[in-house]
Length: 173
Image 1: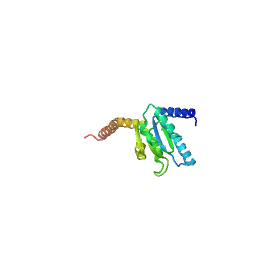
Image 2: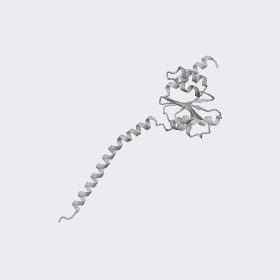
Image 3: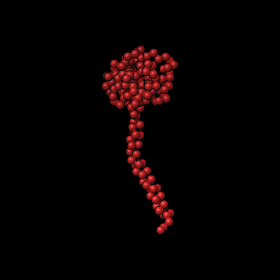
Image 4: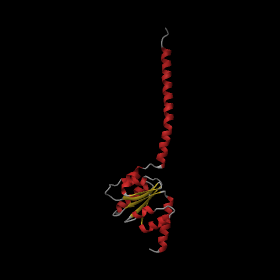
C-alpha cells in the first residue's frame, strides 16, 4: 500500500473517530465471511458503524486525534474491528448476544470519556444507560409525585362525593 493511500485511510479513520463519541475495539480473528456479514447486518440495524481496520493505521489515527487514546494501544493486536456509535451501550448489548467462547469478543472500548480494557468489561458496558434512557428515568421520577397527588385528590373527591351522596340518601329522623 502506498503512503498516499495510507494517509487517506488514516484521515478517514480520524474523521470517523471525531464523528462518533463512543468506540469499541473488537477481536474478529477467525470469523468466516458468513459470520462477518451477519455481524455487519446486526451493526447496521442498530446504527453501529463497523470497520475492520489495520492496527497500525488505527494506531496512527489515534495518535493524530485530539483525544489521548494511548490506553487502547495495547489492544491493537490480531484482526480488529472498530465499532463506532452514538449510543454507548448498543455495541455492548450486541456483543453480549454472542457466547463467551465465540468471536467477536471485546478487547477495549472508549465510552463516556472513559476507557474499558478487557473482555471482562462487557457486562458493565452493556448495562450502561443511554442518554435517552436516563432522561426517561428522570422524567418518570419527576412525574411520580405529581401523579400521586393527582391520584389522591381524585380518589378523595370520589370518596367525599360518595359520603355526601350516602348522607343525602339517608332518611331524616
